[in-house]
Length: 77
Image 1 (tube, rainbow, N blue to C red):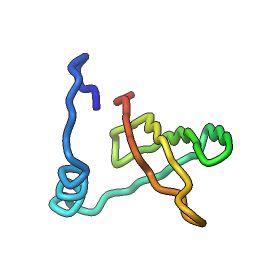
Image 2: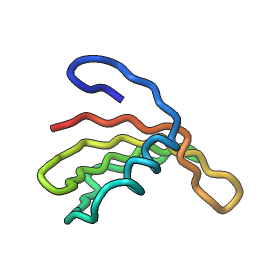
Image 3: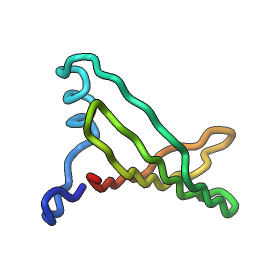
Image 4: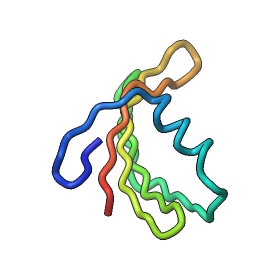
């Protein structure tokens, strides 16, 4: 992740723990881009949690019938 021009790398559990500890808030998402080539895909999602807006980019790989997220980066807007 990148915050204030500083690259940070954290385990996904940090994201889960942050959402678990926060109060409920209004949110919305919009899938803005998807690019699939064989068993690989890149997906961009514009999201908003309360007043905070994000551009999320995911890399996915197909594992049998299921798609798995293998990486995620985001930019605060």
